[in-house]
Image (cartoon, rainbow, N blue to C red; front, top):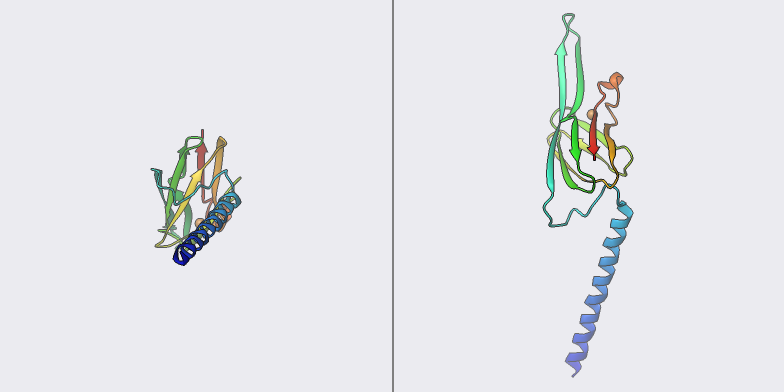
Length: 150
Ligand SMILES: [Cu+2]
């Protein structure tokens, strides 16, 4: 009989732990916002898009080097409500800290590493993926990709 009582308490303990963990993960999901982030642990089949950081470089007749950085491909398309996993491989350039306009998404792409960005837009429009280091022509950019949602 005593054994049974302990077992019930243990069960209640694990139930309580489960409730607390579920609440914490729900809080994190809500905190992340619903416009452009979704649960990465989900098992559902999600389309993948692969992008790289590219550099165009040349030497002028006078010996001066000029260069420009780009995301490649520079434009990607998503359906409204579609869930996509964007893989960005850092090829050229040491680091590209980025953000996506109109969302809470930001991150960094480093040379030799892959950054995975979950995308999910509930509003149509064109969202710009902007590199903070190469944001305009004066900084060897603009390193901006267009995410078209329709
Ligand atoms: Cu960059």
